[in-house]
Length: 290
Figure 1 (tube, one colour):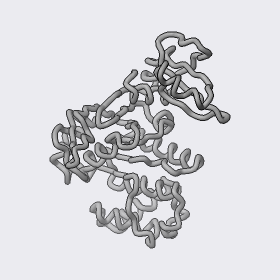
Figure 2 (cartoon, one colour; figure 1 turned 45 degrees about the vertical axis):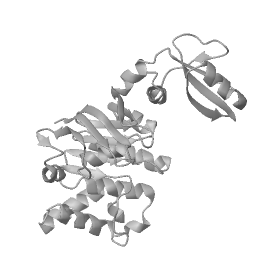
Figure 3 (cartoon, helix red, strand yellow; figure 1 turned 180 degrees about the vertical axis):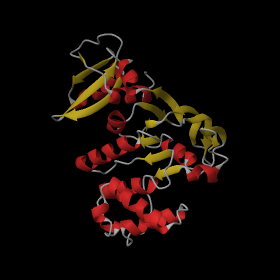
């Protein structure tokens, strides 16, 4: 089953065009939606989650019309927004049980077995009686995944899931998402390049509401082979290099900026060719160079 998005557009009342004729084909597995803050990622996720209307376009999950058959899509949708609301004084078990009731699982024994199985899956069973308010950030995100899996969804939408997690929690979350993504469509919306590189076989880059790239991360990286050059410079040289070269990124290394530029030819002047990575892909597309 694929998710097929065609010519989706959304303009807010303040004139901001959050989605501009976006078309995507998303297969089963982990799909990364990469873009800077304000790119339109959350607008697309909320639209697919039936939380807001699009102005134009269509979206189909198999033969289900996502934009028109909202009740039907909600039965097969799991959604973990960037910030999801829970009752903090409820235990993890009680909260999952409550959500399962809301999703129509009325049989008490069936619900008990489901809730326990989900808590085991996300490694929270030993904390099932603990109030969610006492959970760490990573535990809350794993709980969020558990609630999104109720009802055996065919489509799971995860919005900025690893922001604020420490490296250990992030790795546990990666492993959990990878396991889930083997059998369903999981859309991972993020501005963190590493998330997409670690998890996704297919991806898209979006900025200012426009789709800039759709395809395999490895293929995107291969397209920049031999075109990325780097150099460590003094801080006061940044503007001069921006005038002379197509600088796509800059980060401090040992106190000095390390810049990456996009160039078809050897720029000379101390630049060294470097292997492109997904971060170079991202910045090159945002800059309109790829």
